[in-house]
Length: 349
Image (cartoon, rainbow, N blue to C red; front, top):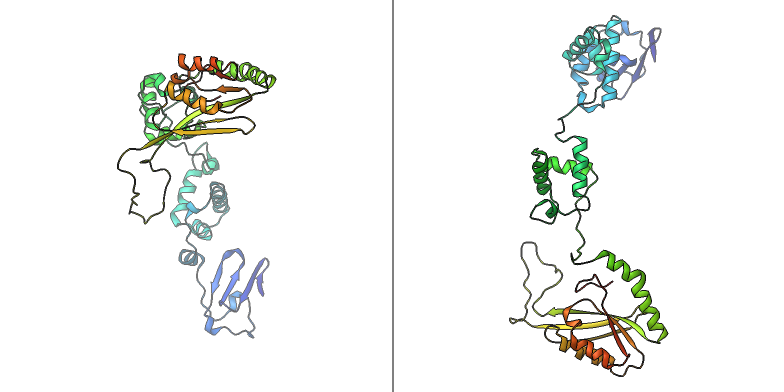
């Protein structure tokens, strides 16, 4: 370690053949002429064996930086410090070289700082305005109210799903503003809306009647069944086809596998009834459900039963015919049927 002036210290590095001169950078020496046991004088008397480069040439060759790699706060600090150093008497070329930027960069900073009424304020970072939004915040909130909890068909649109194209069409229809799909997607995300797979609900459902069923009708039915020593069964039907392929299978990419199935359509129907405590009954039959078949299935279910059965079925027309009511009456209380109001076929409470 050597020192020629107060505050300026030079450090030796055997491996790289450099002498580091504080913040000023590094002075390069011929590594092959470096002797680890040599005694060195101050930097001004190093002799002819060492070649030193100017600071500006050294930084141009070794330390060119791209200002885009720095954040705004760092760039602002560099601009302010650079202009302050130039105003204190340092050469602009040396100042900008110490930061590793292009020579012309300091000229732009000095010109901006010399503007009347601005000074160094012109060097501070400012938030980029970007492309102005075509929808106002108030219009954005209105779009949210249109979408949230509503169906596009309520506004005369043909589809029942909200897509970016549908939202863009509605915005153009209501506000006369044309937006691209990307812009609409950005607005929807800003409003807290995300694409989701909707749940299916039959439009015949009556929410008030369903609430009445849950709160009063069914509790009364459960009490009645318990008092009679019976059980409440929930009934439903489903169908299966032999030519239907469900699920996925693995195969080579681009080569769709082939599954053999019957050439003719073959189907089977299944009916089942379950209780809240886990009781279960089922049977299968061919063809679609009719009133006659429903009565036949009820007879099979009631065979050898001792306790009363309170059956809860959906509103399928075959469940509520005069033939079914006559059979229920003929059981003399052994069977009873209830049909929750406000439900459609295929929906249980």
